[in-house]
Length: 197
Image (cartoon, rainbow, N blue to C red; front, side):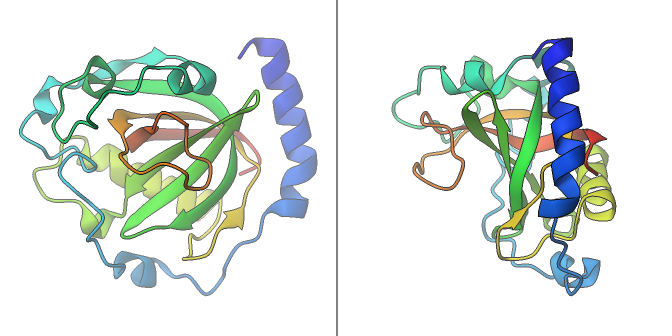
């Protein structure tokens, strides 16, 4: 996304964010932390045996459109084997909506006609051996304190942010805002809002 598009994106988001942001005041950090963690696997929490093979910095700067255009591996990897899974990627995007999903905060990102899911486990669901554990906890804290308290139901957002996470291939397709090839940023290691939060 070039600078001119980012400025237009930010301006539009600032105008729309107050109208669309709905924060569920009943969702407390304690309630969120008590969420079930059965959806958090070793790959999703960067605690798998190959976690040290991931290049966490600097991230690959890319777009949602480019990630969605990647070839989908067959079968869907259950171990960290592809180049996409072995580094972090950063996009600039609008946060379309968000929710709690089986022990994780799931964001639907949007840019230039393309969607992508970006996900971070809740701090209570991160194993002690998770790489970048502090960074993932910071993503959760920053989003929950600045952008809205996640709840089980989808909530609209509208913020514009730099979003960074590890490449992940999801075997499920057809969910809200999922890339057609199943690519995700999962887990997130950085979330820097520039407008709307």
